[in-house]
Length: 181
Image 1 (tube, rainbow, N blue to C red):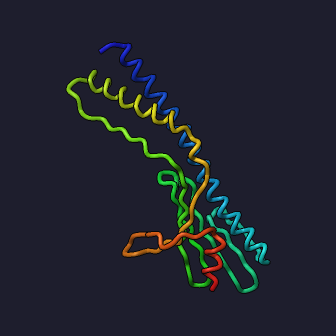
Image 2: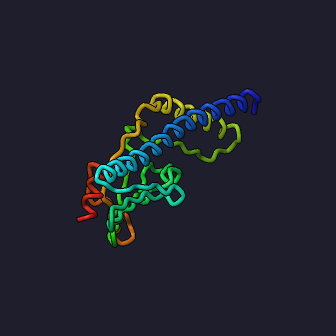
Image 3: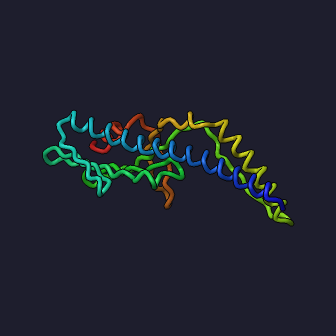
């Protein structure tokens, strides 16, 4: 095995990691934006209706109060949504709780690449370089333009231990209105 092959492998691996990191940073920024947007929309709606709204960051909870009426929204940490781009919010009023799923929308497909066992170390490294180059080309073609913080919301329900989407909603305001009825 040559030093040139080892150097080429290191360079290709570094480029792949750099491109992946750039996409992950954009993905995380979009998740943070999604969570903040839902919180801000809920806050604005409740304040417009005379509620006193406080954000308890340490508890990841937004609370709205008006006289004896209390609405709380439990929101996730962005890190918990990183792998899937899907976050679950809990909207509560009195003894009713509604799960709301927020999912980032993108036009991208996943970037896969696995490695098979080879007889020689050199053969394995050559195949890994080939696979990484394919994945790099795919990452370059995708860029990050499709990661743009657009998302959809849906009412979720727990069925036999699985959380499934029941129906789509336009915004968190619709959920708040539903839960107080």
